[in-house]
Image 1 (tube, rainbow, N blue to C red):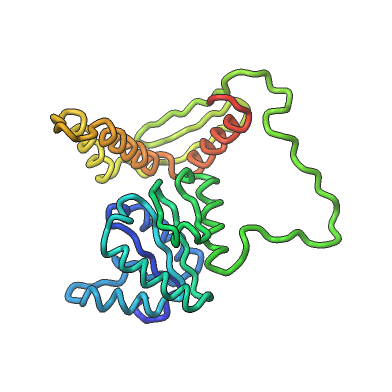
Image 2: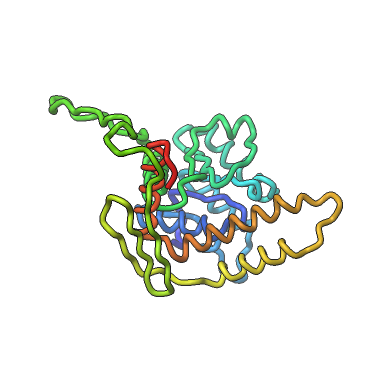
Length: 263
């Protein structure tokens, strides 16, 4: 939106821009008026002026936490402003959104955060997004049950049914036009993928470069390669698993974990 009066200002490192853009879009779909710099800045604008306007006018702030974002001086400047506003006016919330593992300051770590580190897609992502939406609305993570209703029995502990022990099975088939997941004991799920996108191709090129470059004497090459490999996996998941298949796969992984089995 071009007018002042935003519900949420999002502070982040631009290396995380693709993931943050999806988060901002989902919050927009949920009805929030979002200040995201790439949605607001127009050629010729004063960057600092527009950012100051957004920080001043936004009701709440979100800080997307990752090692990259917390190393950026500009992000830390925005964080300090958002924290000062939240301390001065408790009605203005500052919510840390954990995107990746990072060491947070004591003040930031003391705030109630929303964890997306393992909630990359499917039901876990929806659960974390719902918690974030409720936090921005000033609501607790879960509502109390209605009074006077019937007794609800708890679910038995996962893994204590009659399934024999052993690995759980599922078949994932991926093609340029169709992705299908066939679990052991659940209906088959099929979707049309987004397809291979340019950021994925760039991530693969970067991984290839990391594998073949000559490391320096003080360069933790395995760590860099692991990070590059994880980025390829994340992009491929977005290209081919975003949707019903991704949610079904996340559910199958959760079921296997709960049963202390492998999938």
